[in-house]
Image (cartoon, rainbow, N blue to C red; front, side, top):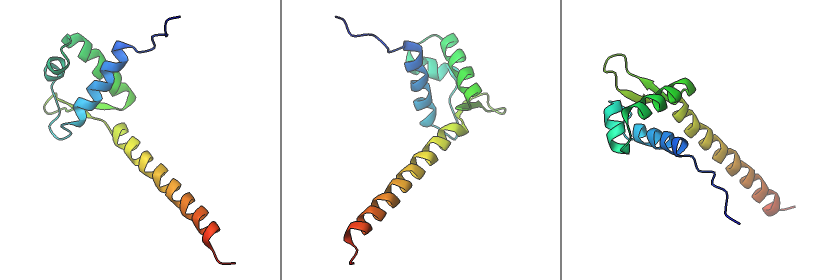
Amino acid sequence: MAEPKYTNEAQQRILKVVMLLAEDVITGLSPTQIASELSVPASYVTRDLENLKTAGWAMQSEETGRWLLGAKAGAVGVKVMHSIDRAERKVTEDRNRFTRNT
């Protein structure tokens, strides 16, 4: 029996757009640059960027028209670090519980 195909080309492309935007968070990228890098039509990139904008993952500079990574991407990084910090505290508590002199 064949394995189910869950990978979706559009979803994979939008993740690639996020990664491209992460490479230049100061000046951003034009839709043309993104389309060229991904070898896709500009209309695909326009749709992807609008979806990312709606979700808070991308924003368009009013001054240049270029696209930048949005605040949600930074928020994910902060959440990851908080999660790691909580895990470290828990491990330290557990280690102390087992190594304390009674």
